[in-house]
Image 1 (spheres, helix red, strand yellow):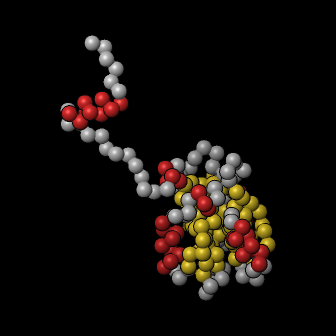
Image 2 (cartoon, rainbow, N blue to C red; image 1 turned 90 degrees about the vertical axis):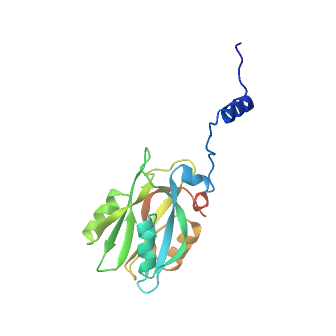
Image 3 (tube, rainbow, N blue to C red; image 1 turned 180 degrees about the vertical axis):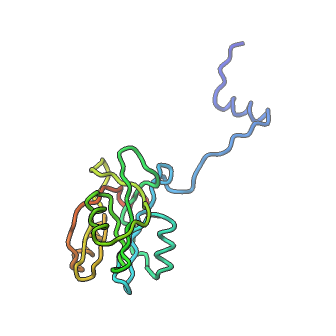
Length: 180
């Protein structure tokens, strides 16, 4: 007899045979299924330093150094995706400044200013993609601080504190796509 099993009949048949099918569900937000992670902004009042990170080691380093979490600035990819470039962390021991960049100009500027490479923080788009927002670099001559922001709050905070815009470092998904 050529009989097509319905989905319910197939499941019943498998259960009778003792075959179990693991439930596939997640309690995590949907972004984790596509590899997005929060790009978090930390701030140290002692150092006058803004620091954006998307890695566990970056979060631990920030907290261990006395930085406080300000907000999620956007969402970056954990692993390189087609069309993305690395978001690189540089650090200046002289300035006690963290600097994230995804452009060749940013890398050149960091090296020329004596910054050392720390790690890849994630991956961003070098050009605007549907649903993405610019990740802007701001700089304060007074503090000697680089500050990357993608939220309206971040941009307003930077401008309100006397930072000037340097350039767009890349494009990230809005914070609402990965906020917890």
